[in-house]
Image 1 (spheres, protein in one colour):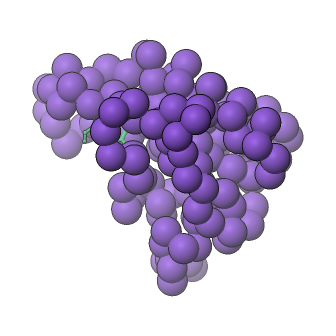
Image 2 (cartoon, rainbow, N blue to C red):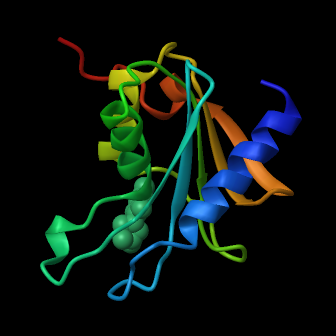
Image 3 (cartoon, rainbow, N blue to C red):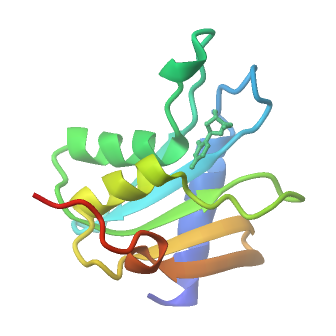
Length: 132
Ligand code: THU
């Protein structure tokens, strides 16, 4: 995918991050998924006083896409704090990505900003994923 589309996805993830609800960890995350239809869906992390009920930004974005009728995802961008470590997705979210990725090599963009990011293939982040 071209750099302009990568930057556009990071921008959408950043917009979603502005809605993060993270009063317990103070760690805000945003994600944006590009569906095969061409539509982009955003998501943010949403925490809860019962900590284990928290949902990650990535799964929120993916589930929004699926709830809108999408079934195949072409790419995902994730953004965390501008000055922190890159926000690599957690294992649970990697497995959920695998469920809907149109290709095992789906690009996973991990960003601090539009000018500081890395791109991975999903299968390098989660080799030998569980499949039925
Ligand atoms: N979080 C995400 O949104 N995505 C990840 O891949 C890892 C963690 C969120 C969950 C929680 O709200 C905060 O980051 C700290 O763990």
